[in-house]
Image (cartoon, rainbow, N blue to C red; front, side, top):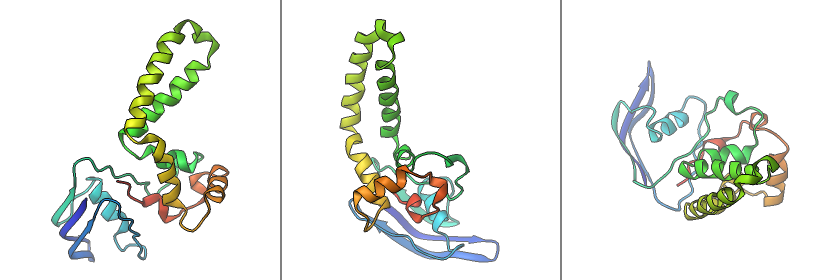
Length: 176
């Protein structure tokens, strides 16, 4: 669960929150909509523990992973949407990166003498990836960004362009 308890925040003369509270329970899907400057990104910075509210408390239950993309897309330019969405998923993304490297190493003829060791490590990493829910992650990442779109349309659209091409709110969704 994610909880915001009686938070208050102000930037200069701009009051963002006064006594705001919310709870998001496991399995709930929540949309965060508001005009520029309303505090949407600030809420995510609180959940990521990058900032603290002026008053109140923010709690993220143990075992919950929050992933989001910042609004500034400079560091994300030119990378596939789904890959970067998955990169924000915590430990499973690190395991996925190792799995991808091992796949590359297994296909490298120059590493033929290491094949037995690579295959063994690949099995270990693959089991960890599966235990962390990695195989379901891509589906969750796709589902989070395509409300109302068929999976094939989302796949085609997102693989053909970079994140920088679309400044959509789905980049700021939380995954638990």
